[in-house]
Length: 68
Image 1 (tube, rainbow, N blue to C red):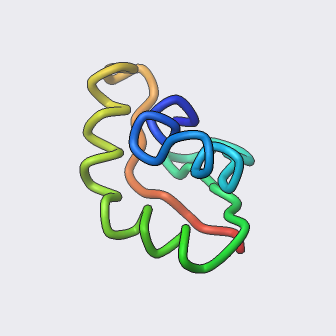
Image 2: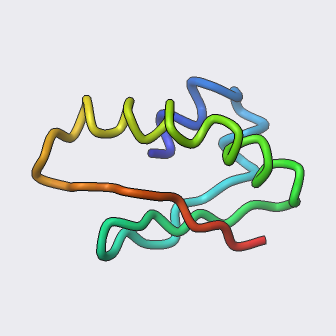
C-alpha cells in the first residue's frame, strides 16, 4: 500500500500517510491532514484495484479506513 501511495503522490504523499493495520478486509491509513484523506478517498477504487492486482486474492481488501 505504501508503495502505491508513493507511486501516486511521491515523497510528500509517502511522508503524509502511513498504513496502521490491515484487518478484516480494511486498510487503516493515518493521514497528516484531511486533504490527504480526501485525495485517497477520491482514488480509493483505483488504489484497491492496484493492491489486489499485486497481492491477489490471498489478502482481500474491500475498503480503506482513514485516521486523521
